[in-house]
Image (cartoon, one colour):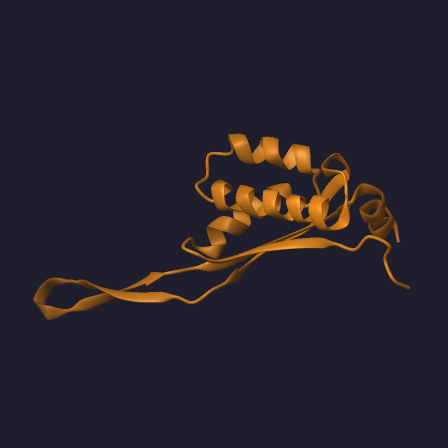
Length: 124
């Protein structure tokens, strides 16, 4: 049973931001339409909104260009941030000690699909 128009994904890798902070934004837009998500991302006060907005626009552009889908009919079906490699640094402290600093990175993935398909998937 093949989908006539499958999910269309976009991935941003090695984003220099903690995945915990990015997930806070992704949880707000998951399941929303493209227009609603853009409005939310525009006015949320988090730095993670910028890379998430870029990935969302890329996913919609992929859907529009590669699959001929209308951006107004798209809903965010998947949105997640995976842990990327951690850059390890050290902070000098008193008496010759050093405290570790972990500069975390993440991989942001957003998938969109047409609204009618997403509603049918959630109903079953």
